[in-house]
Length: 426
Image 1 (spheres, rainbow, N blue to C red):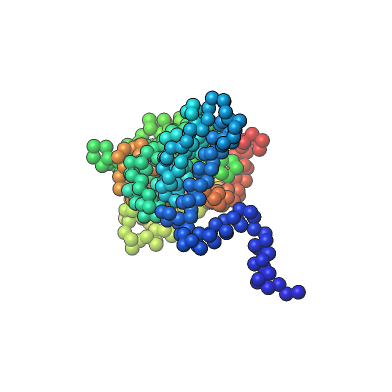
Image 2 (image 1 turned 90 degrees about the horizontal axis):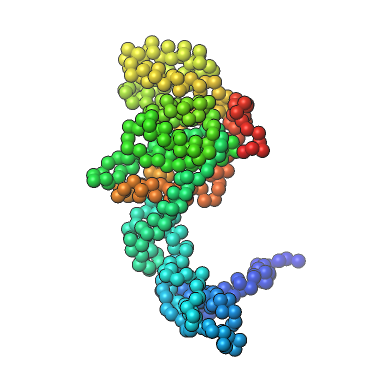
C-alpha cells in the first residue's frame, strides 16, 4: 500500500501533543481575527499576560488555601483583595501589563513575578549575553527598542550587568584542583580611564586538569612592568585556592619564571616557542625572514639539547654579525627553552605555544574592541568575566579540547609518573 503525503500529514497531526494542538488552534483563531502573532497587541503578548496572571492566581490559591469564590475562605481572616496593575519587561514580548492579585493581610509574596520586580529573569540573561558578545550599554538599549519595542535605559543595563559582581567575586576565590598538567599565562591590554586613559594589562591563566579539561583559573589586573612581587601574589593566590603542584607553566611574560620555583618547586617553566619565533623576526629585515625561518627551525625541532645547541651555534655563526639581537634573544631564553626538548612529541605539540590562551584572548579582544575604554578596572574585569561566563555554551569546544589533550596526558602520566596522582584521587 502506497503512503501519500496526505496520510503522513494526518499521522503527524494525530501524534501532536495536547499543548501543540492548543497552540495550533490559537494560531488559527488569531489569523481568523486578523491578530498578529507578535507586536504590541499580538498573540504572544496576550499569551504571556494570561500565563503570568494564571500563575499568580494559582500562587494566591496556594497561599490562602482555598480557590477563588470558595466559601471555605469565610472567617479565615485573610481573603483576596482585588488586584493591582503592574508592567513587566519580558524578553519575547517587550512590556506586558498584568494584574497582580492581593490579599487582605498583605502577606502574599509572589514568586513568578516578585515584589518590585520589573523584569523577568530572561531579560537579564539576554542583557548579559549581549554584553558578553561586545555590545555596549547604548547598543543593547537600542537593540531592545528596535527588536522588542521596549525602552530600557543604559543605566538599567549597567545595573543588570553589575549583578554579576558578587558572582565574579565568588568565582575568583573558588577552590581549584590540587594538580594541573599545565598552566598557561598571558596578558591582554585594555584601556582604562583613571584620570586619563591609560593601558592596563589584565592577566589570565588557563589550567589543564589531569582529565584534560580546561579551566580559566582567574583574572588579575596589573599596572605594566610587573615584577617578582606581583607574580608572587598571583601564584600564591592560586596555591591558597588549592593548587599544590603544576607539571609545566607556560608563559611569554617577564619576571614570572623566577617566582614559579618558589611557589611550586618541582614545576618546569616553559617559554612560549611561538613567541620566540615571532620575536626573532622583529629586528630583522623582511627579505631575510624565509631564510631565518629555515635556520631557526632545527633549534626547536632538535631531538635533544645537544643537537639544539649545535643548531644554535650554526645560527650564531651565520647571523650573529648581522643580527646580534636575534642571537642574544635565543641565548637568553635557553634556560626556559631547553626543558621543551626533553618531552615526548605529544607534549611538545600542546605546550610549544600559548595558542590555548591566545584563542581566549581573541574572544576578550572582540568584547572590548567596541568599548574603546573602560571607566575603571572593575568595569574591565566585569566585561572579561562575562565573556568567560559565556564561553562554549554547548560544550562542543570543551569536548574537542579534551580529545586534543588525551595523547599529551598519557605522555604526562609517563614523564611525571612520580607526581601523577592515582586515578581515584583526581
